Length: 115
Length: 117
Image (cartoon, rainbow over all chains, first blue to last red; front, side):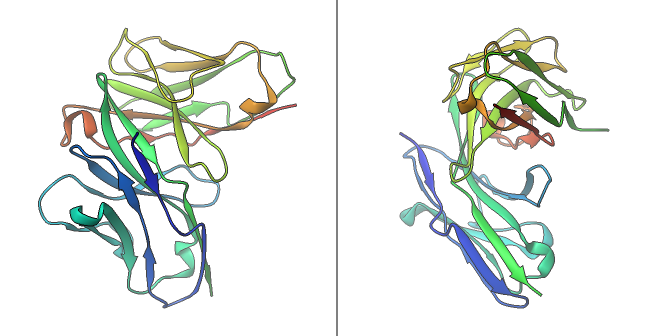
């Protein structure tokens, strides 16, 4: 069965620290990969996505992620975090389920950035 | 352009009560989805509708029913609420004609926080 695993459940950083959140997926077929962010009290917003091509993808707010097919990984990075990056981050893989796209989410990583 | 809207934002039910969660999108998307979010479990797919007039089960459909009323609206019904259905419910939509096809980006609504006592 397809699954997504995020290794860090809660990460605490100081402002200006670098961020890397791990994500591994289990699926042998064609995958599209996403990182979503959920700010406190808000709905999920797309940070970035990988469909094909350059495995290093850049998203909004200075985030980037690298798709490493051999490692089934799609880690999220940001060189210097800000207090406003405090949120929960979800990695997701999408597969085709019958005639729909089925998103499979990781458990989420809560990021707390100290000012 | 409001995107995906959901009503209500909050709801408290007693065990055994029924209710319908409403979702509407104004992006002319064909596909719509219902997810539930529980702590430490990410989001899980309850039901989806690939296109108007079709619905299909996701990972956790038990205890729920859905109706795709028209292209814009997709409702989720709890016939007899149980405490295990306490969760945050998100509706989403996507358009398979966009990049990624059936694996294209899904757009989420603000969520409904449901508590079943």
